[in-house]
Length: 341
Image 1 (tube, rainbow, N blue to C red):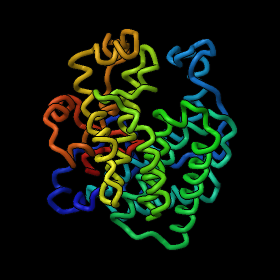
Image 2: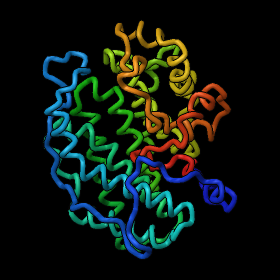
Image 3: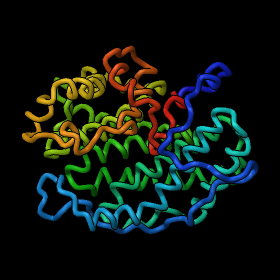
Image 4: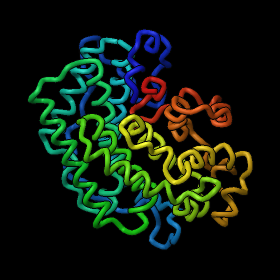
Protein backbone atom coordinates (compact mmCIF):
# COMPACT_ATOMS: atom_id res chain seq x y z
CA UNK A 1 0.00 0.00 0.00
CA UNK A 2 1.56 3.26 -1.10
CA UNK A 3 1.91 6.29 1.15
CA UNK A 4 0.93 8.54 -1.78
CA UNK A 5 -2.69 7.49 -1.47
CA UNK A 6 -2.97 9.79 1.51
CA UNK A 7 -2.25 13.03 -0.30
CA UNK A 8 -5.07 15.56 -0.45
CA UNK A 9 -5.37 15.15 -4.21
CA UNK A 10 -5.65 11.39 -3.99
CA UNK A 11 -8.23 11.57 -1.24
CA UNK A 12 -10.40 13.78 -3.40
CA UNK A 13 -10.29 11.26 -6.23
CA UNK A 14 -11.07 8.11 -4.27
CA UNK A 15 -13.90 5.96 -5.57
CA UNK A 16 -16.76 5.07 -3.21
CA UNK A 17 -16.55 1.95 -1.11
CA UNK A 18 -17.29 -1.32 -2.84
CA UNK A 19 -21.04 -2.01 -3.04
CA UNK A 20 -20.52 -5.60 -1.89
CA UNK A 21 -19.15 -4.46 1.45
CA UNK A 22 -21.44 -4.28 4.46
CA UNK A 23 -23.05 -0.89 4.84
CA UNK A 24 -22.55 1.08 8.05
CA UNK A 25 -25.96 2.24 9.21
CA UNK A 26 -24.92 3.40 12.66
CA UNK A 27 -25.32 7.04 13.62
CA UNK A 28 -22.21 9.26 13.58
CA UNK A 29 -20.12 8.52 16.64
CA UNK A 30 -21.05 4.84 16.75
CA UNK A 31 -18.81 1.96 15.74
CA UNK A 32 -19.83 -0.94 13.53
CA UNK A 33 -21.16 -4.05 15.23
CA UNK A 34 -18.35 -6.45 16.11
CA UNK A 35 -19.17 -10.18 15.97
CA UNK A 36 -18.15 -12.33 18.89
CA UNK A 37 -14.57 -13.50 18.33
CA UNK A 38 -14.35 -16.83 16.55
CA UNK A 39 -11.62 -18.77 18.30
CA UNK A 40 -12.08 -22.30 16.95
CA UNK A 41 -12.71 -23.37 13.37
CA UNK A 42 -13.49 -26.90 12.27
CA UNK A 43 -15.03 -27.78 8.91
CA UNK A 44 -14.45 -29.97 5.91
CA UNK A 45 -14.18 -29.42 2.19
CA UNK A 46 -16.65 -27.62 -0.06
CA UNK A 47 -16.26 -30.40 -2.63
CA UNK A 48 -17.61 -33.91 -2.96
CA UNK A 49 -15.33 -36.75 -1.88
CA UNK A 50 -15.40 -38.22 -5.40
CA UNK A 51 -14.30 -34.99 -7.09
CA UNK A 52 -10.74 -35.75 -8.18
CA UNK A 53 -10.13 -32.24 -9.55
CA UNK A 54 -11.98 -30.62 -6.64
CA UNK A 55 -14.49 -28.88 -8.88
CA UNK A 56 -17.77 -30.58 -7.88
CA UNK A 57 -19.43 -28.65 -5.08
CA UNK A 58 -21.12 -30.56 -2.24
CA UNK A 59 -24.02 -28.22 -1.46
CA UNK A 60 -24.41 -29.37 2.14
CA UNK A 61 -20.70 -29.09 2.92
CA UNK A 62 -20.47 -25.77 1.09
CA UNK A 63 -23.26 -24.36 3.27
CA UNK A 64 -21.53 -25.64 6.42
CA UNK A 65 -18.30 -23.88 5.45
CA UNK A 66 -20.18 -20.65 4.75
CA UNK A 67 -21.90 -20.88 8.12
CA UNK A 68 -18.61 -21.38 9.96
CA UNK A 69 -16.85 -18.53 8.15
CA UNK A 70 -19.86 -16.18 8.02
CA UNK A 71 -19.11 -14.16 11.18
CA UNK A 72 -15.46 -13.81 10.18
CA UNK A 73 -16.29 -12.69 6.65
CA UNK A 74 -18.84 -10.20 8.00
CA UNK A 75 -16.16 -8.82 10.30
CA UNK A 76 -13.62 -8.50 7.49
CA UNK A 77 -16.17 -6.66 5.34
CA UNK A 78 -17.06 -4.23 8.13
CA UNK A 79 -13.39 -3.57 8.86
CA UNK A 80 -12.61 -2.96 5.19
CA UNK A 81 -15.46 -0.54 4.70
CA UNK A 82 -14.60 1.45 7.81
CA UNK A 83 -10.91 1.50 6.88
CA UNK A 84 -11.65 2.71 3.36
CA UNK A 85 -13.80 5.53 4.68
CA UNK A 86 -11.09 6.48 7.16
CA UNK A 87 -8.61 6.78 4.27
CA UNK A 88 -11.12 9.01 2.51
CA UNK A 89 -10.97 11.37 5.49
CA UNK A 90 -14.48 10.56 6.65
CA UNK A 91 -14.28 10.74 10.46
CA UNK A 92 -10.86 9.18 10.12
CA UNK A 93 -9.84 9.26 13.77
CA UNK A 94 -13.15 7.82 14.96
CA UNK A 95 -13.24 5.08 12.37
CA UNK A 96 -9.63 4.14 13.03
CA UNK A 97 -10.40 3.97 16.74
CA UNK A 98 -13.31 1.64 16.01
CA UNK A 99 -11.03 -0.61 13.98
CA UNK A 100 -8.39 -0.69 16.71
CA UNK A 101 -11.00 -1.51 19.38
CA UNK A 102 -12.61 -4.22 17.26
CA UNK A 103 -9.33 -5.93 16.41
CA UNK A 104 -8.18 -5.66 20.02
CA UNK A 105 -11.27 -7.55 21.17
CA UNK A 106 -10.47 -10.37 18.77
CA UNK A 107 -6.80 -10.29 19.73
CA UNK A 108 -7.59 -10.56 23.44
CA UNK A 109 -9.78 -13.58 22.74
CA UNK A 110 -7.11 -15.28 20.64
CA UNK A 111 -9.46 -15.41 17.67
CA UNK A 112 -8.77 -17.96 14.94
CA UNK A 113 -6.04 -19.58 17.02
CA UNK A 114 -7.62 -23.05 17.21
CA UNK A 115 -7.76 -24.37 13.66
CA UNK A 116 -8.86 -27.96 14.04
CA UNK A 117 -9.02 -29.16 10.45
CA UNK A 118 -6.89 -28.92 7.34
CA UNK A 119 -9.56 -26.91 5.56
CA UNK A 120 -9.71 -24.39 8.39
CA UNK A 121 -5.95 -23.96 8.24
CA UNK A 122 -5.76 -23.42 4.51
CA UNK A 123 -8.69 -21.00 4.26
CA UNK A 124 -8.02 -18.77 7.29
CA UNK A 125 -5.08 -16.68 5.95
CA UNK A 126 -7.23 -14.72 3.52
CA UNK A 127 -9.42 -13.67 6.45
CA UNK A 128 -6.76 -12.48 8.89
CA UNK A 129 -4.91 -11.04 5.92
CA UNK A 130 -7.92 -8.83 5.31
CA UNK A 131 -7.91 -7.84 8.98
CA UNK A 132 -4.26 -6.88 8.74
CA UNK A 133 -5.00 -4.70 5.71
CA UNK A 134 -7.72 -2.86 7.63
CA UNK A 135 -5.33 -2.36 10.53
CA UNK A 136 -2.64 -1.07 8.18
CA UNK A 137 -5.06 1.47 6.72
CA UNK A 138 -6.17 2.62 10.17
CA UNK A 139 -2.56 3.11 11.23
CA UNK A 140 -2.09 5.42 8.26
CA UNK A 141 -4.61 7.93 9.60
CA UNK A 142 -4.49 7.63 13.40
CA UNK A 143 -2.23 6.61 16.25
CA UNK A 144 -3.01 3.53 18.30
CA UNK A 145 -2.55 3.10 22.04
CA UNK A 146 0.78 1.25 22.57
CA UNK A 147 -0.72 -1.53 24.71
CA UNK A 148 -3.52 -2.12 22.23
CA UNK A 149 -1.04 -2.00 19.36
CA UNK A 150 1.10 -4.65 21.03
CA UNK A 151 -1.87 -6.98 21.55
CA UNK A 152 -3.11 -6.63 17.98
CA UNK A 153 0.29 -6.99 16.37
CA UNK A 154 1.33 -9.90 18.58
CA UNK A 155 -1.90 -11.69 17.68
CA UNK A 156 -1.55 -11.07 13.95
CA UNK A 157 2.08 -12.14 14.13
CA UNK A 158 1.16 -15.37 15.89
CA UNK A 159 -1.43 -16.18 13.23
CA UNK A 160 1.10 -15.45 10.51
CA UNK A 161 3.85 -17.58 12.03
CA UNK A 162 1.48 -20.50 12.62
CA UNK A 163 0.44 -20.35 8.97
CA UNK A 164 4.06 -20.17 7.84
CA UNK A 165 4.90 -23.29 9.79
CA UNK A 166 1.85 -25.10 8.47
CA UNK A 167 2.45 -24.33 4.80
CA UNK A 168 6.15 -25.14 5.08
CA UNK A 169 5.83 -28.40 6.99
CA UNK A 170 2.30 -29.79 7.11
CA UNK A 171 0.13 -28.64 4.22
CA UNK A 172 -0.78 -31.17 1.51
CA UNK A 173 1.52 -30.96 -1.54
CA UNK A 174 -0.96 -29.16 -3.78
CA UNK A 175 -2.09 -26.67 -1.12
CA UNK A 176 1.54 -25.83 -0.40
CA UNK A 177 2.03 -24.71 -4.01
CA UNK A 178 -1.31 -23.45 -5.35
CA UNK A 179 -3.67 -20.53 -4.75
CA UNK A 180 -3.87 -21.38 -1.06
CA UNK A 181 -0.12 -20.83 -0.68
CA UNK A 182 -0.51 -17.61 -2.65
CA UNK A 183 -3.13 -16.36 -0.19
CA UNK A 184 -0.92 -17.32 2.75
CA UNK A 185 1.90 -15.34 1.13
CA UNK A 186 -0.35 -12.33 0.64
CA UNK A 187 -1.68 -12.51 4.20
CA UNK A 188 1.80 -12.76 5.72
CA UNK A 189 2.88 -9.83 3.54
CA UNK A 190 -0.04 -7.79 4.91
CA UNK A 191 0.92 -8.62 8.49
CA UNK A 192 4.57 -7.92 7.71
CA UNK A 193 3.63 -4.47 6.41
CA UNK A 194 1.28 -3.78 9.31
CA UNK A 195 3.84 -4.80 11.93
CA UNK A 196 7.01 -3.77 10.06
CA UNK A 197 8.44 -7.28 10.29
CA UNK A 198 11.10 -8.07 7.68
CA UNK A 199 11.11 -11.78 8.50
CA UNK A 200 7.43 -12.01 7.61
CA UNK A 201 8.00 -9.99 4.44
CA UNK A 202 10.79 -12.34 3.37
CA UNK A 203 8.62 -15.44 3.85
CA UNK A 204 5.81 -13.77 1.94
CA UNK A 205 8.13 -12.97 -0.96
CA UNK A 206 9.36 -16.58 -0.99
CA UNK A 207 5.80 -17.93 -0.99
CA UNK A 208 4.67 -15.64 -3.79
CA UNK A 209 7.67 -16.82 -5.82
CA UNK A 210 6.89 -20.45 -4.97
CA UNK A 211 3.55 -20.12 -6.73
CA UNK A 212 4.21 -17.50 -9.40
CA UNK A 213 7.35 -19.13 -10.77
CA UNK A 214 5.29 -22.13 -11.87
CA UNK A 215 3.53 -20.00 -14.50
CA UNK A 216 4.01 -21.17 -18.07
CA UNK A 217 4.88 -18.94 -21.01
CA UNK A 218 1.27 -17.73 -21.29
CA UNK A 219 0.92 -17.07 -17.55
CA UNK A 220 -1.25 -20.07 -16.69
CA UNK A 221 -0.69 -21.68 -13.30
CA UNK A 222 -0.59 -25.48 -13.59
CA UNK A 223 -2.25 -26.30 -10.28
CA UNK A 224 -5.14 -23.98 -11.10
CA UNK A 225 -5.42 -25.42 -14.62
CA UNK A 226 -5.96 -28.83 -13.02
CA UNK A 227 -9.29 -27.70 -11.55
CA UNK A 228 -11.43 -28.84 -14.46
CA UNK A 229 -14.35 -26.53 -15.33
CA UNK A 230 -13.32 -24.13 -12.56
CA UNK A 231 -9.74 -23.65 -13.75
CA UNK A 232 -10.24 -20.01 -14.78
CA UNK A 233 -11.92 -19.20 -11.48
CA UNK A 234 -8.98 -20.56 -9.52
CA UNK A 235 -6.46 -18.87 -11.81
CA UNK A 236 -8.16 -15.58 -10.93
CA UNK A 237 -8.25 -16.49 -7.24
CA UNK A 238 -4.50 -17.05 -7.25
CA UNK A 239 -3.86 -13.93 -9.31
CA UNK A 240 -5.49 -11.65 -6.76
CA UNK A 241 -3.33 -12.85 -3.90
CA UNK A 242 -0.13 -12.95 -5.95
CA UNK A 243 -0.44 -9.48 -7.45
CA UNK A 244 -1.57 -7.63 -4.33
CA UNK A 245 0.94 -9.49 -2.16
CA UNK A 246 3.70 -8.58 -4.60
CA UNK A 247 2.56 -4.95 -4.74
CA UNK A 248 2.75 -4.74 -0.94
CA UNK A 249 6.35 -5.96 -1.08
CA UNK A 250 7.40 -4.07 -4.19
CA UNK A 251 9.04 -1.15 -2.37
CA UNK A 252 10.62 -3.33 0.34
CA UNK A 253 13.61 -4.49 -1.67
CA UNK A 254 12.21 -7.79 -2.99
CA UNK A 255 11.39 -6.87 -6.64
CA UNK A 256 8.75 -9.62 -6.91
CA UNK A 257 7.60 -8.55 -10.37
CA UNK A 258 11.05 -9.21 -11.81
CA UNK A 259 11.41 -12.79 -10.58
CA UNK A 260 11.27 -15.77 -12.95
CA UNK A 261 11.46 -13.68 -16.11
CA UNK A 262 8.46 -11.58 -15.16
CA UNK A 263 6.17 -14.44 -14.11
CA UNK A 264 3.73 -12.09 -12.38
CA UNK A 265 3.40 -9.99 -15.53
CA UNK A 266 2.49 -13.12 -17.48
CA UNK A 267 -0.01 -14.13 -14.80
CA UNK A 268 -1.65 -10.71 -14.80
CA UNK A 269 -1.84 -10.65 -18.59
CA UNK A 270 -3.34 -14.13 -18.76
CA UNK A 271 -6.78 -12.95 -17.65
CA UNK A 272 -7.66 -10.61 -20.54
CA UNK A 273 -5.96 -12.98 -22.97
CA UNK A 274 -8.00 -15.96 -21.75
CA UNK A 275 -11.29 -14.12 -22.02
CA UNK A 276 -10.32 -13.11 -25.54
CA UNK A 277 -9.28 -16.66 -26.44
CA UNK A 278 -10.99 -19.24 -24.22
CA UNK A 279 -8.85 -22.03 -25.62
CA UNK A 280 -5.90 -20.76 -23.55
CA UNK A 281 -7.66 -22.23 -20.52
CA UNK A 282 -9.78 -24.96 -22.03
CA UNK A 283 -6.88 -26.70 -23.77
CA UNK A 284 -4.88 -26.68 -20.53
CA UNK A 285 -7.80 -27.68 -18.29
CA UNK A 286 -9.21 -30.19 -20.76
CA UNK A 287 -12.74 -28.94 -20.16
CA UNK A 288 -15.08 -26.08 -21.04
CA UNK A 289 -15.10 -23.39 -18.37
CA UNK A 290 -18.11 -22.42 -16.26
CA UNK A 291 -16.83 -18.85 -16.27
CA UNK A 292 -16.94 -18.66 -20.05
CA UNK A 293 -20.34 -20.35 -20.40
CA UNK A 294 -22.11 -17.85 -18.16
CA UNK A 295 -22.82 -20.40 -15.42
CA UNK A 296 -20.29 -18.67 -13.15
CA UNK A 297 -20.15 -15.02 -14.18
CA UNK A 298 -16.96 -13.03 -13.66
CA UNK A 299 -17.36 -10.69 -10.67
CA UNK A 300 -15.61 -7.40 -10.00
CA UNK A 301 -14.02 -8.69 -6.77
CA UNK A 302 -12.17 -11.28 -8.84
CA UNK A 303 -10.44 -8.45 -10.70
CA UNK A 304 -9.65 -6.29 -7.66
CA UNK A 305 -5.92 -7.00 -8.07
CA UNK A 306 -5.86 -4.94 -11.26
CA UNK A 307 -5.77 -1.62 -9.37
CA UNK A 308 -2.56 -2.58 -7.59
CA UNK A 309 -1.01 -3.80 -10.84
CA UNK A 310 -2.03 -0.71 -12.82
CA UNK A 311 -0.66 1.57 -10.11
CA UNK A 312 2.76 0.13 -10.92
CA UNK A 313 2.67 -0.72 -14.61
CA UNK A 314 1.22 0.54 -17.87
CA UNK A 315 -0.97 -2.31 -19.13
CA UNK A 316 -3.61 -1.09 -21.63
CA UNK A 317 -5.08 -4.56 -22.17
CA UNK A 318 -5.70 -5.08 -18.48
CA UNK A 319 -7.01 -1.53 -17.99
CA UNK A 320 -9.48 -1.93 -20.85
CA UNK A 321 -10.60 -5.36 -19.66
CA UNK A 322 -11.45 -4.28 -16.10
CA UNK A 323 -13.03 -0.92 -16.99
CA UNK A 324 -16.60 -2.23 -17.11
CA UNK A 325 -16.16 -3.96 -13.73
CA UNK A 326 -15.15 -0.90 -11.73
CA UNK A 327 -15.26 -0.06 -8.89
CA UNK A 328 -12.95 -2.94 -7.99
CA UNK A 329 -12.90 -4.18 -4.45
CA UNK A 330 -12.36 -7.26 -2.34
CA UNK A 331 -12.65 -7.07 1.45
CA UNK A 332 -9.95 -9.73 1.86
CA UNK A 333 -7.57 -7.51 -0.11
CA UNK A 334 -8.39 -4.43 1.96
CA UNK A 335 -11.68 -3.35 0.41
CA UNK A 336 -11.92 -0.63 -2.24
CA UNK A 337 -8.69 -0.95 -4.19
CA UNK A 338 -8.82 2.60 -5.52
CA UNK A 339 -8.53 3.70 -1.90
CA UNK A 340 -5.28 1.78 -1.51
CA UNK A 341 -3.48 2.14 -4.82
